[in-house]
Amino acid sequence: MGVDASGSTIEMANDAEAISEAEQLVKGSGAEAKAAGMNDESMIIKNIEYIRPFEIGCATQGDDPLFHGIVGAEFSVKCPDSCDQDEAGIFGNMIYEITSSVCKAGIHSGHLEPEGGYFRIKIANGEALYDSTEQNGVLS
Image (cartoon, rainbow, N blue to C red; front, side, top):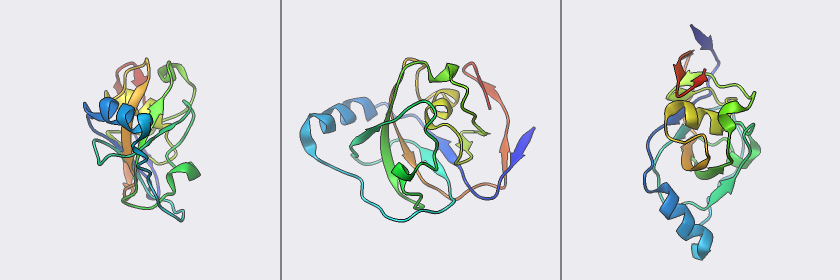
């Protein structure tokens, strides 16, 4: 079963270095993501350049103004504990519809533990269809 959407996505990928990189940035490197504007696009989660992490909540979606919505914009995020138990929805499998919960999609994809942690997202072009799957105890 899939979800037909009009052009917004989240994609996940492993980011083994994100925690140490994010910790270095929090300690004061001062690197900040800068972008402007807003559109209806996609979000990809993977290992990208050094970016200061944003602390977000379990219900934060990929279309949150924090992420600017510009295709190609990249952000590091820190998710809290237990987002797998949150009622926020996700739509997709490795590539997620932009209104999906960022943290829950990270858990579904296997790139974030239910205990929370760091990973990265990248805004990307959307897909026409998002598959529904159950992975890591989370149904999309």
